[in-house]
Length: 400
Image 1 (spheres, helix red, strand yellow):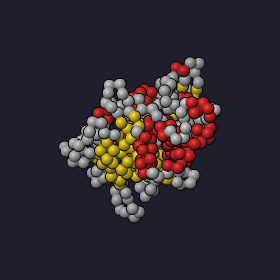
Image 2 (tube, helix red, strand yellow):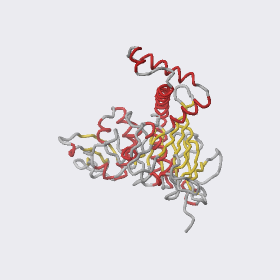
Image 3 (cartoon, helix red, strand yellow):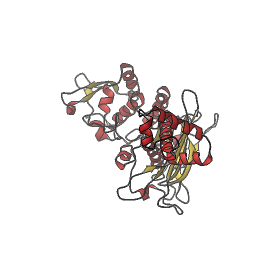
Image 4 (cartoon, one colour):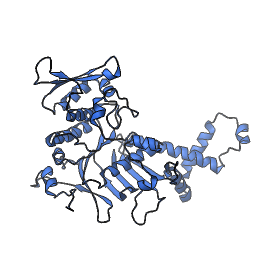
């Protein structure tokens, strides 16, 4: 699980470092940088997957634009400076520390794309310091010895351990493999920022170009179809956060356009108690997606939802946050959630270190900053929703 994140030179973030929990909720006024923080993590995930072209950035929920505008534009920043993201966490099995870095550069050309320089820089630092080179050179020997080429052919190609260019190339391959393993252990590789839409959730014929679930909820029908019986039972437990819900059935049509989710309303009479996703209220559809993301074994271990309160009643928003807390712990997830709904905050227990609330704001210079809200046991304080509305937490505009 990721413990610490360090972001430099991304949009409204010039330099930012803070510690994460398992369930992390971000509040703040519009345009303060909440989504920029999520995007920086998604950019690191794209670097881990070696897919930094705009089409792949967009598929992760990043609002990709001209490279100059993806860097911070504050005084003193240069138009070619690197975007740097560093994450630190712990392995689940033995608690060892895991580090991942992405140092992204772009030449600002019309058809260029972002390049991650972190592996090359790590190799240069290792060579320059003279430390730990034996490991890298040892890997070079092993890789060369494993080649299925006769020594004469290797000699003819002028390939030998003493060839520094080849040695560095093989060492970089070793470092890249080790970094890939780190990204996997942190759950970073498949990180996505979900921004579900009602339209995508009602149209169950939509396929996702990102499996299993696309940014807006595409692919939900297939995901629901592949839940196990215990998972369906857990899903329906969470759906009962909406009091009228009494059951759900996934129905495969003769064509994708005829796929349907039958939903049972306990208050309606026989014959009309069942209706499909086209008639369901949008809040139910959002809840259905969130519960499926948390329960399925096919979804990312680490993901974000931007505006998790969309279409939800304030009290239901609190219930949804409690669902995230319970299911994330049970299914070993780590989630980042943004919200503008004060009611959502009442779903958090800030005495639990795994549950964290952050206020995101821009300082007097316009730079994004993050402040964690903490509460000690026994404090006689108002509910978080009240404190937010009263302005004591921050995160509200104060210029009008």
